[in-house]
Length: 470
Image (cartoon, rainbow, N blue to C red):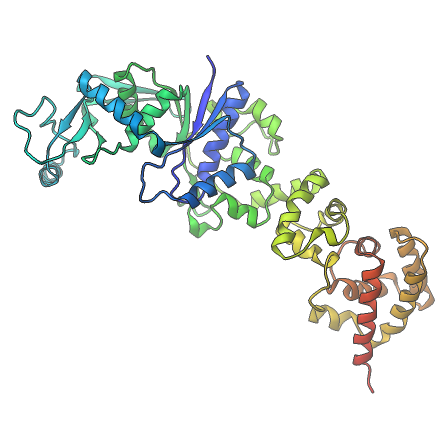
């Protein structure tokens, strides 16, 4: 049997963290078993579904690197197929027309609630209607079994039994003919030959209904795995108030996709005490039966720690590819300065996110907006003008613009003026970068380039001259 999994988001918003984890688990399971990963867009809610949300989902999947083997399939393109199956079920007697009015159903519900009964349809139209009311378009209901139990052998939650008498004859087509969610899912899983459904445990109550419909259609139900929800640090369900919950928001905040994937994989799943996994390791080691059945708590600090690890240890060219996007958001052209992989190597010990790295690296490519007032007051004092002027002359005369040559020049000028190296390096750093924090000064200067360094020293000398008393 070829394993076939699917990720089936509704395009009514962005790709959120919970959905991304479900997609990752489904993708990993398919990859581990040499199977097929299907992307399906469940857009039957035509009023709430938007093209923008579809784009956001596809962008999120692409950024995370979760390539799908088939799709995306859109439910809105499959309405004729759903209608065909409904007609088959009506002909087979596994579905029926229901003419009950909204008022009758509301009254029935109120009576059941008053009698402390579980609200459910009473089957009035289940065995046919002798005289269908004229001009009343019926809904179509599934004729759910009335006896026995439907058992879900869930890979995460274990064996879960549902009494069929507790299940409803749910509506599978509205009075305007449009199919409902639970029905379209059944037809799609059947037609797409899905063997394993990994999804959030908020869908668990839908599962017995879907299984009964699949059985009525003569198709074996897939194997299910219902993963628990994700909670915020405060124990409440993860939501916007906890910060970034959209996958693309994490990109904007400066996280690498592999850091987020690693973190999401560990939300509810573990392999011994191992915290850091390559994608190949995840494919090899992931086991959906090892996913915990209890809810997982989202820890932003842990995610940031992972991100910093990947910034420090990742291939500089790979990190540079993602850094380029963040520099572009700042209006910085990475082609106008040093090679980005070299900047990554220089900066990665000092940044927790790509957004922070981009902010700290902009000075390599464009003039600083000005001097940090606090840093300038501490380091750009009139008495440092002489040493900086001598440094400028030495820099201009260097035969090679390398970190060792620059370090030797700084050391020589500091010694000549009786200064500790830091007492000269810090004013120089502020003059060139606008602030007192940067990579080691020789590396900072080497990457910034001779022309920019000399121009910025000239500007600093003018600044110091204007500070000096008349």
